[in-house]
Every structure is written in C-alpha cells, then in structure tokens.
Length: 122
Image (cartoon, rainbow, N blue to C red; front, side):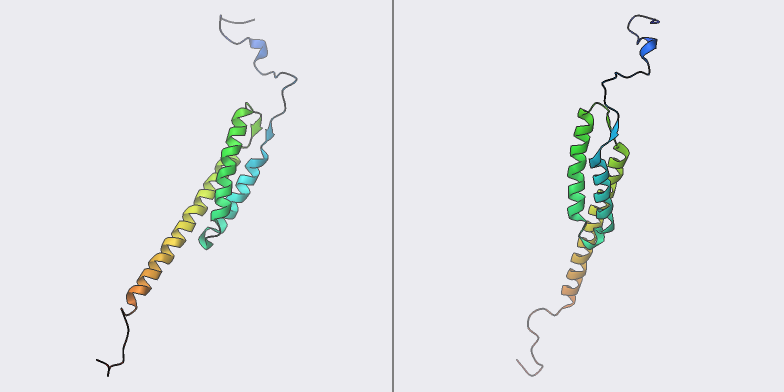
C-alpha cells in the first residue's frame, strides 16, 4: 500500500502505537511561567532576580526533558513565555540598579569635597 519505495505507508499516517503515552503538559513549564511572571512583576524592586534565575534554570531542565521524551511532553509555548518574562524581570532589575547608582553618583557629586570648616578658620 505504498506509492513508491522509501515512502511511508499510507495506512500508518495518523496512528500511534498503543503503548505510547498520551501527550501531557510538562509541570515545569507551568512553574517557569509562574516564576517568570513573578520576576517581571517584582523586577523593579530588585526582588525579581531570584525567581528569574530559578525560572531560567527550570526552563533548561524542562527543555532537556521535553527533548528526551520524544514529543510526549508539551508546553513549549509556556516555556517561551516564562523565559521572556524572566528576562524582562532581569532587565528591569538591571535598570533599577543602574538608576540607583546614577542617582547616588549625582548626589555624591553635589556634596562638598573634604571638610567644611567655619568661615573664621584658616
């Protein structure tokens, strides 16, 4: 029932082996999304670094597990969204730190240098 040598038989195009597991969403994908969302929401307060780092580490593990499962673990879209949110949280944290450093440097530049003695002192 094949059309040419080397092609897939037409009868097996959409069937699965009965012992193959059902595709399931990876639980780490949901965790990566949740941690990425927390990181994006708390990124400006510098608290987003920890959940963002954990989200990026979990996403690496989830991608490896999904690759090893041969397509039976789903949730790649949730992983991508979670990774993007984690990176947004890290960027917001970096913006907050750079802004704080610039404000600190400007305030220190306005401060007088050395001791400020009284006008009657030599």
